[in-house]
Amino acid sequence: MKQFFTTAILILTSSIVFSQSETDFRKVNWGMSNSEVKQIETSELVKEETNSLAYRTDLAGFNALVGYIFAGDKLTRGKYVLLEDHSNRNDFISDFKKLKELLTKKYGNPGKDETIWKNNLYKDDYEDWGTAISIGHLIYYSTWKTDRTEVTLYLSGENYSISTVIEYQSKELGNIEKELREKEQLSELTDSTFRKTVWGASKTQVKNDEKLELLHEDGNILAYQSTVLGFDALIGYIFTGDKLTRGKYIFQEEHSNKSDFISDYESLKKILTKKYGGPKKDQTIWKNDLYKDDYEDWGTAISIGHLLYYSTWETEQSEITLMLSGENYKIDLLIEFMSVELKDYEEKTKEKEVLNDF
Image (cartoon, helix red, strand yellow):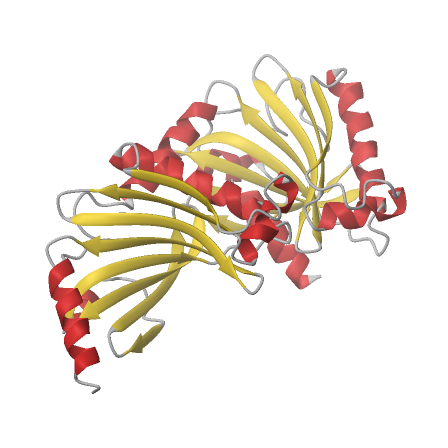
């Protein structure tokens, strides 16, 4: 249950008493500040971060978390995340249908009402639909609109955990959050080197520049861990002769539906393209065509080395590569930054090291 609660908190901060007619979400209105919402909300506060608040509440007979999400200290979204747990995963579908019925009574028929199969493995056996949801094969969602608000109910899963969420988003302020998030992501990418360092910096200099807690130090590598471009990632600094020559982001996201790694890749490519322009190279390479004709199996194809994605960019000081690859049913997604000026130095130093072995 503790793990489930933690997952629910993450859903609230990522990305009823149903809303009263005179307010936008619960007892508050879009655009309110963090402090204003805290004065109005009377439920138990369980987590507070810079841009979000999370409370425990009851929702139409369900235990739930309620989250308030802010952009520039303006309330732009609200979420309910059910905390219900079921040994029979199909019961989550029943919860979804009950909430959809209540929302339909409140807002009328949904504008969209979708049941999406991303993988048809369990489609022919309804008893396994709950399992299909839990591993990302099946998604339910429905949407409604009012004059000021977009409402989305969705049922989805990942790694055998299922989430039932109702999200309210301001029509007027929704773009503000998107623009601020995009601005923050782009600010994580430098126009010249890697993070806040310069190419050629020593390990000591990098350790002074990097404000994160050092996770690992080994020979020519310094490793840290943080959130990068919206994803959990390892951050690696690679040195040659005590000069920084490369930097890497190795993303740590896990997906039971392996094709979701392709979506992650495309999201990162979009961010890099906004920062650096169109990629110099943009390749989808099939080393083996066994799964080429069925997109549902492309994630599997990546995991066994049949399929490779990569894109590259260049600036005056850096070569940047985004790569999605796999081997032995494990998938790797990474971004590598390499010094243009020190490229020859790195190659010659490595060649010298190899020759010294003889």
